[in-house]
Length: 118
View 1 (cartoon, rainbow, N blue to C red):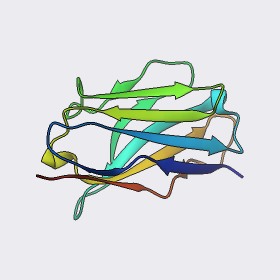
View 2 (cartoon, rainbow, N blue to C red):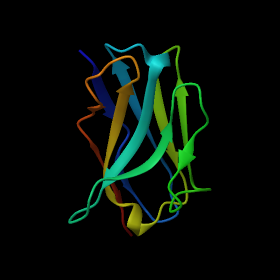
View 3 (tube, rainbow, N blue to C red):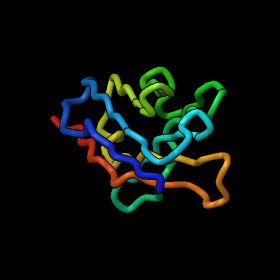
């Protein structure tokens, strides 16, 4: 069974930085597309950044130049480095895994809160 465990959320002032991590178990990580989503209160869940298996990362326009997603196939982890955080980055962030070799769709982490406030 594929499981995702996130860590690294918290509170930070505008302009600050946070790093989120997601550890994946039960999957062939190198054959799994990975992404980070976020959901702010009253809004739909949206894709922030993705790093598909064997391909380059892509980002939502709102975070380009500020966030960086990376994956480590050796440790089955994906990270999201968030810099120059803004109030509007406040949300619950979710890690998502989509094993390309399975037909069961994608899997989600439990979510981690990121709050940007002064």
